Length: 565
Image (cartoon, rainbow, N blue to C red; front, side, top):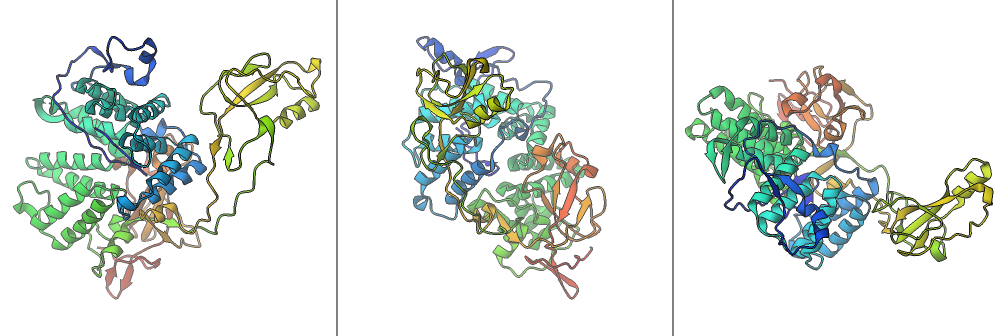
């Protein structure tokens, strides 16, 4: 059962696998309901008509969550980050203010933040910070399914696998939901199913033999930055590498990249392999390297404490052979912080936001600290003035066909007005003439609580411990990805906003430590539909220090080039 909490970019999954008889090639209903169910229940997303799970499918078309999930506003993201900061793994669970965390998630969800709503569903499911309400958790998940969020379809499958609430435990239905989630772009579902298709022969209900599709699913999830997918790909190439030694290098690369994405399991594998070398039967490492083994152990321990960590600049402190390791003073925090993403310090404390509108009374009254959402929570068709409000909330009057300056001014002067469900709209038309034509009332939604302005003293990623501040270079320095790196240090990658993969590629963790004269990471190696020449890399400084002939791990912004090896 998936009781997931989305922390930034991670889905910590727990799936309960029970015996399942897979029905191939027929349609199943995600029902778990009896013949006595009300007819209107059939419209709920939990009862969606689904194709049966087919482990022997011939094709899989890769889709990404970032391309289909709803856009998130800055205000909603700030609330979400505040909630994640309060849920810091460095704080004992008993000391975390889960009531406030739940409130922040609710506020962000009301502003359309799908990850916050996902997490809020998890809190209701477990009764943390809010009264336990399993039906509420399922309903919040269903709302996300309606909005096209792939992770919600994945979660519904886990609800069925665990028999959550009123849902009857049904593994067949669970796999059908997971299959739909994977097809929609869920990186978690793609990884879970993809790993189960890598067997050499069918072993239902544990595994099936469909390596071609299984690898496509894992590669699709890996392209989305999903750590578990990188680890599973490493395991697969490590297995193949026992008979085909040429594949061992690919296994090492996948494990190393998975550590960057936050895989504790991959860090453990490389820790063990570098410690034992070829003496271990499944090792992908030829020679023992205790220094590298020790450093992977440090990252493994850090990820055990905080699964939200990412280390995009891991190569700054722990490059793969044959590159030489920089000297290190043995301080674990220095090693960990140097590998984190670099973020700029806030330029200045944020000024309190001015009140958007004067205090209003009557129907126009909106309590202080509350406001109308950017988009209404529910889509409602515009209503003529002679009708009644079909749903409660705030509505605004608009002339249907304004032409003159006076008519446009009338539209601009109208205020949102509160109406109860079934209440007649105001038909007095103050300030209008008969020749001005008809008016309609447009639904604006229910008020949502606004976040109190906060003076930022540090970046939210630093508050959560997953990033670190740095003084960025005063002079910008950019380089296209197909050219050699002109300067050692940390580089941030991006593509043009109109690029088809912009939503997926342009993320905070898209950084890399590159030595002068070296090559920037090839997006194709990460299974991204991006060419090197389409990527612009921005230099952030942060080169390691040179002391004599030795290179040292450094958190400073030294402009000295790294030693070439």
